[in-house]
Length: 151
Image (cartoon, rainbow, N blue to C red; front, top):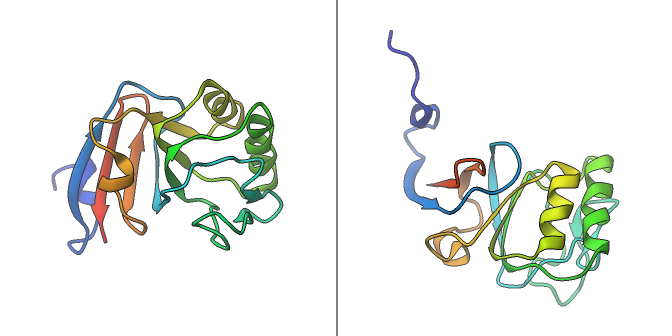
């Protein structure tokens, strides 16, 4: 029997529809379900860090869980507090697996590194348009590759 290839570990109902690329990001390779937003993201002000739920009523993802999801946003919001907020969520076991931004800032990258959360940005396509909530993602920051599987 031939060794299993990377692409073969998904069921036939999962169809790879996109391979997005970017310069290398931070963190280890992760897989998970996408949660996409047209709003920006602040780990400090948009989220209940104890439960891993979007708690800002005006946020498009209000009431939804970010736990173990790969989050997709157009931009990062907030200052240094967002870095320690990511670390706090990681310590509580309610952090996302990964972060994908159209464009982020150094503070969000610092927080992702501190909390060991995968992060990429500046992809070859707008991730907010190319990825849909519920898609299965394989995020490989070191190689700058996001594989998108439509479910």
